[in-house]
Length: 52
Image (tube, rainbow, N blue to C red; front, side, top):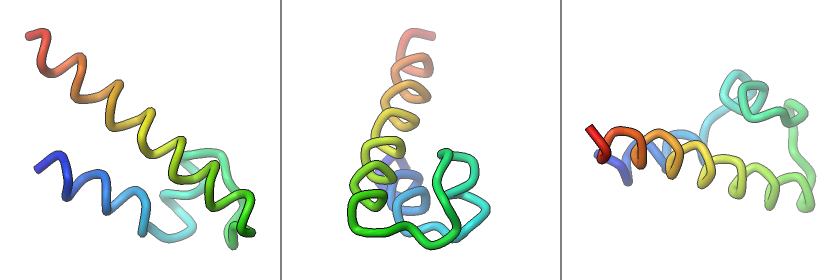
């Protein structure tokens, strides 16, 4: 489930990118930021979940 959520964020379209603070069509440099942001979201979300 975690992997599916991560891939959804990474491969997501403009709405997900907006949620991660990126432009609608990320450039190569922004694509790296997109992946980094998605990783942070996943780690933050599931770290909190695992503490319950």
